[in-house]
Length: 559
Image 1 (spheres, rainbow, N blue to C red):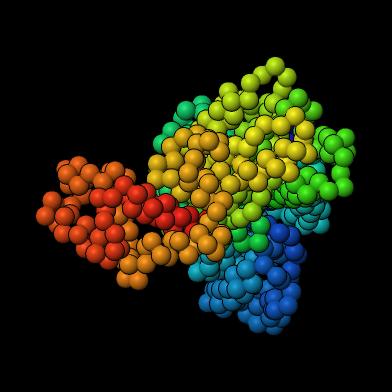
Image 2 (image 1 turned 180 degrees about the horizontal axis):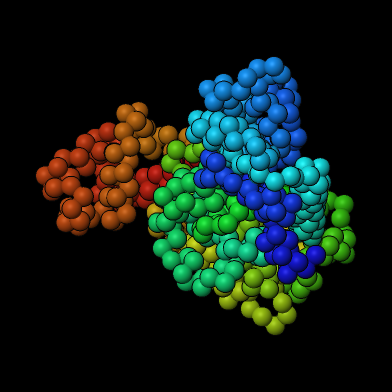
């Protein structure tokens, strides 16, 4: 169904009401008079029922329009009519209809039934439902046929609307439509602007549908925060926006908003909910597909690092299946996330997932080719293909800058160090030796006090890199304990920090004092205490070198 047909379909949507029945020609010719309930003529009518009884228990379910000739208002046979009795019967009759929840009642009272008309007029003042009198003959059967045809036609229209909406959003789900396309189709069907926002009240996609985008999105975040998130599709907040959450199993990640009033919210409810389902399904499918690809690339990268029974030709073919283009040079790189001071495994996992997405998106946006996979918790490995006749460093620097720019616009705060391994012509060699080398560089660089370079090679980490390789040797650990035992026994990190600052100042006490770290008398007293506990002279160059090496090894112990 085309867009124009969809709009016509929704424009035709209207409930059958009491006023709609009064407009039926078969009623109009009978000169209907509204005795009461004139402000309730928009009551919806579910069905039309002809009733000449006074006991409606089990007969009516609510929402019916009752047609009657008013026989229940007449006195029993043999009883003389009186105004008082007529009014009591009329009140009892109308109250019974009111309790049954009918939408209204039309009473046919022909000429000569003046008392019944008067009684009905008086009794109508005590009920909430519309009470209408006709004083000419009405063929109620014809009225019910006309109204029931209208009701059935409306029900069929509702079914057609639901079928149309179902087909539209099912197709969008199956084709993996982007959020912008789903939001645009929903706005076209409703005929009103729609905005998709995340839980931070930032706009993800929108369709202005005739309203200038600047007007629609003006001061959006502030306005949106005035409309609390609701898990039901409804209007709420001081802005009176119609909203519907987007997400699965009670875990919303956004919401769809119609920020204007509508003539009929019920039609929009269904469209928003189906659009929200399509958005959630597509997001889940995209995530599953992405995770499957990442798992497959991680498996291949692990095999390439082992590479015991794999030939270079097989490695190239399998890597090409994941999009790695053949190249004269391959560069291994590892990006290591800076761990928080109070590490939460779930936080680290979310950051790693965000980093994986960021690296893949950046490579795609820059037209670069590479294998990307999680190496270990908090680290992402890349095998980057370097095209012919292009130096590697400018490409790597451009990649690092793009990653930094991409992280700056992300909702997830990410910080990392990048280690670069030696470039190799063979893919297997780059994976076998280069990934471990890049990982070692990234880990070691993360311990630097000022790791502000976009990337590091082995030559950049110098002595620290060598010590990181040796830190697991028991003899090295014995050396550290022997050099720093006088400070480690007390477990005072302040003493270690003071020693490090002193060693980094090359033993210049006056310079360290001028830096404002400690006052001169306090600094001299603390350094004298350090010398005593360490059992060495801090003025001796060899002692300072030995302590500096031991301190570096101590700082590297948790890598």
